Image 1 (cartoon, helix red, strand yellow):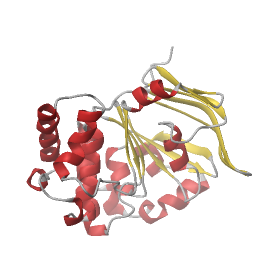
Image 2 (cartoon, rainbow, N blue to C red):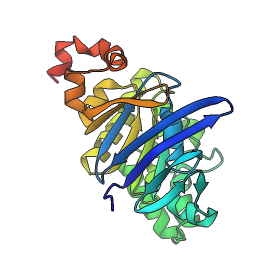
Image 3 (cartoon, rainbow, N blue to C red):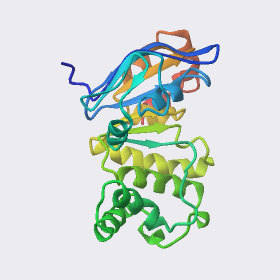
Image 4 (cartoon, rainbow, N blue to C red):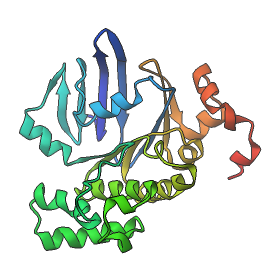
Length: 257
């Protein structure tokens, strides 16, 4: 029996006549941070969405947290799927906060409604998570008063509130202005240091180099290269990898960080 907390085997996914995933296989161990890079349209986001049942692959299998999520295009029964989704937190490019709820309520509502925690306990835990992401002082604010970076940090706190075993990040800084990106990446670095299992799709190469245990390179729905992050940054073997890393490959300061 595999010890991987996430194990995808030969996933294939189509949208109409367009095949997005071509036999993608990937195993992620508990506590591992895996970063996926690749050009737009390479299947990175689709793979992540398959990992929590938002998309269903037509072929292959997917096991999460020791439970089979999908096999040969068949998802778990809906109630079982919802239970499993509690173990997999996901942070999207968009923040998806409830605009009519205070920040505190945005974070506490999931544990209260889904985990059936008391309102007092859920709010206490929400305050702890807001402090973790540096936004406890915004507990009583409304989402429309926050910057994009602050909203994304709230989205991370909200995902963590359900106590997931795995966190999935789909380009969490792509919608942010450059000056706001760092505050979100800092929270993610802290999670990595604490041992959270994470699969991250990102274009932030310095961040990938710093936090990823393993780098996955996708192109046209296939994994074309993978390995230890330091090895791939120093000795990329696939042309697509070299093209993606070209801006940093010759930057000596990058390697001195």
